[in-house]
Amino acid sequence: MDIKENQLPTPPKVLDAVRTGFDSITRHVGLVLFPFGVDLLFWFAPHLRIKHYIEQFVAEITSLQSLSNPEYEEVMEVSQEIWQLIAERFNVLIALRSYPVGVFSFMSSLLPVKTPLGAPTFIEFPSLGVAVLAGVVLTIMGVILGGLYFSSVAQAALNDEVRWRKLFDNWMWVSGQSLLLTLMWAALFIGVAVFGTCILGGVALFSMPIGQMAVLVYGAVVSWLFIPLFFSAHGIFVNRDKAWPSLIEGAKLTAVTFLKTSFFILLMVLLVQGLNFLWQIPPEDSWLMLISIFGHAFVSTGALAASFVYYNDMTHWAQEMLSLREAYLEEKETSSQ
Image 1: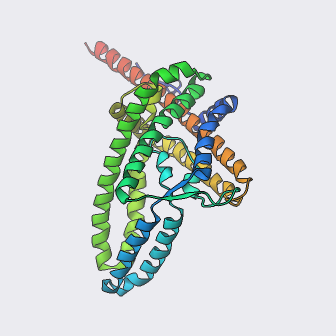
Image 2: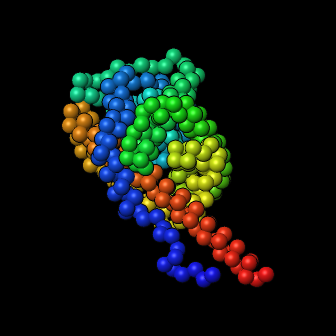
Image 3: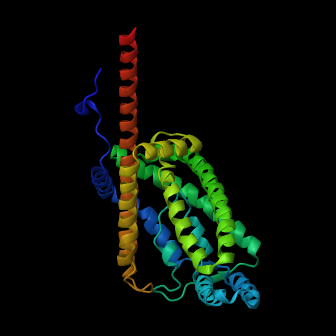
């Protein structure tokens, strides 16, 4: 059997998936309340800080500066300014924005310290251990809330309806699988970070310029390697796969459609991150920031819906290609007998 081009299944179309995803969120715009509400929480709720511990860490690093290579002095000065800014703005509450499953947030990247009602309440943790424990608890809560958010968006994108009773029945199962996937991501990222730190640290000892170049190369390589993880969670919500099969299936589908899928991922990143420059125009203590929060919530939720549509199209295309290949091999084997 000769397979003609017009007999091949239509590959997934990026722009069609984007349009379908955003259309579904337009019809179910209430789903943007998930990221909208989380951002309001990050903005107005008491800020949980570890400023004292960050400043203590910076002071210890600074005390070692006299022992370092003179080439590092300028880098250390810039580093101190960055760490001071982090100390002022970092809010442990943003651990609620979990990965890879979680509710999207604009404020988790902005880290505001002002509101239209004045400065928020700042709460300093009594110990670093308590802060870490709070971060873990908040991350688990974020995964659980993200499970409901992802499930509802997947239903809206693929079925053009949101059946809340069914969502709540499956909520704990998808949250459990999402939590397992989060642990897998954490283990993978820690492994890559430790390996990269050792390599880059060794290179930087010989030359700072070469070390800086190595950081750029390492970042580019890691970004390329983690492209297959973009759809690692989608199988849980589309096909009810468990965490590990979902991760593997997402990587396989990305591999067989790498160029087109890379274009889709790049388009989504540019759309969401590019518009962040627009959302940052209002001052953080202005009520106009509500428009930015809503805009980010709508765009990020629409992008998530588009990713579910694209993943579903990829899955169907791969299944049809596999069926066609099996039929071809079977007929070839029969004709040879």
